[in-house]
Image (cartoon, rainbow, N blue to C red; front, side, top):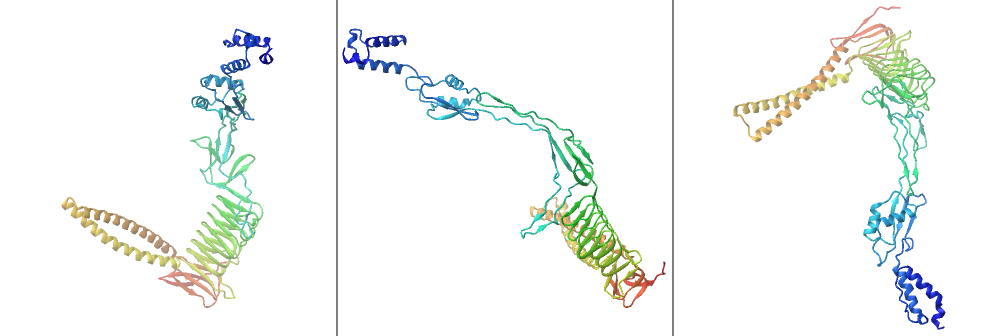
Length: 520
C-alpha cells in the first residue's frame, strides 16, 4: 500500500465519506480507484467541512461574565466571520439566558452591539436593582435632645464655662417637632432574577407632651403653646414656664438663658450670666454676676458685685443689699442697703428696713428717692439724683435746634413746591425739566416732613419725661451726712454739714429743702 494508505486506511476513508454525506455535503473524493486518494485531497475535504459549519456563540469564543454579587453581567462577542450574517437579538438573549442572566437586561447596549458590531469588548448587558429600604415613621425635633453641653476649650488651653447652657427655650407658636410618615421600601433583584426583599415599615403613635399641640393646618406639625424651657421627660415633650435650679449655680453649671422665670434656690458664683424672659429670683448669695431680666430681679441675700457685676431688669429690682454693682431698672429699685454702686431707676429708689442706707456711688431715680440714711460718718461722697438727668436736657436742646432747622428747610422746599404747582395749574402743563423738578421737590418735601414729625415725636416724649420728673422728691427719714450731694434735675446741692429728717424738692429750677416730722 502506498504512503496514502498509511495516512488513512480503507475502512477509515469509507467511514469519513459517510459522515460527510450525513451532513449533506458532496464528497469530492474521486470514485475511480480508492487506492489512489491522496493526502491533500483528504485534508481539503476536512477543511471545507469545518468552514461550512456555523459555530455557535459557545463555540466561537464569546462568553458572559457575571459579578460576584450577581448585580452586573457583561457580554463578550467575537467576530461572527464573513461566512454568516451578524448576531440577532434573539440569539444574544438566548445566550444570556443559557448563562443564567434572566433579568435587568440593558436592551440599548445589546442593540448597539448588534448594530455597531461591537466585538472583543466586555459590554454591560444586564444590571440588577439594589433593594431600597423603607423608613419607619419618625419625629424630627426642632430642639437639641442632648441637654448636657460640654464646655469650650479655648486656644490657650483654658476651659470656658461661661457659655455653657443646659437650657433650651421656645416661644409660643414655635414649631417643636415634625412627624415624618413611614415610607415603603422597594424590593431589589439581581441579574439571575433572585429577589432581594426589604423589611416592612411601621408608623408610630402621635406625640404626647405638655404645652404642645398639633397645628390646625398640618397635624404632623407640633407647636408650643407657651414660652418656656423645652426638653424631653419620660419620652414626652415638656415645656415649663418656670426653670428652677435647686442648689448653687457655678461656672460649671454655665450660662442660664430662659424665656420664662428663673428661680435659683442656692447662690450664684462670680462670672455666671443669667438671662430670663420674665423674672429672676436668687435665694442664696450672689457674687460678681451678670443678670438680665424681662421682668423683676429678686435677690434674697443681696449681691456683692466686686465692681464687676451688672444687673438689668425691665421691671423692678429687689435686693437685701447692692454692693459695688451697676443696677438698672425700668421700674423701682428697693433694698435695705446700697453701697458704692451705680443705680438707675425709671421709677423710685426706696431704702427699707432699720438701716435703709445709701452709701457712696451714684444713685438716680426718675420718680424720687426715699431712705433712712444717706452717706455715713466717714463722709464718703454719695450722690443722689431725682428727675431727669442732664443728658436728657442736652438731648432736648439738640432736638429743639434740629426741629428749628428742619422747619426752615421744609418751609423753603414747600414754597418752591407750591409755586410750581400753581404754575402747572395755570399753564396746564410744565416743561419736562420743570416737571422733573416738581417731582424732586415733592419727594424732598415728603422726606423733610417725615423727618420733622419724627423729631417732634421724640421731643414731646422727652418733654413729657421732664415734666414727670419735676415733682420728684428726696425724702430722708434719718441722717444726711456731710459729703452727700443732692441733685434734682440739673441742679445740685452739696451737704455741708450733717442733718436729718429732710425733704428735698425742686422749685423754680432751684433745690428747696424742708424738715419732715419724724415718725417711728
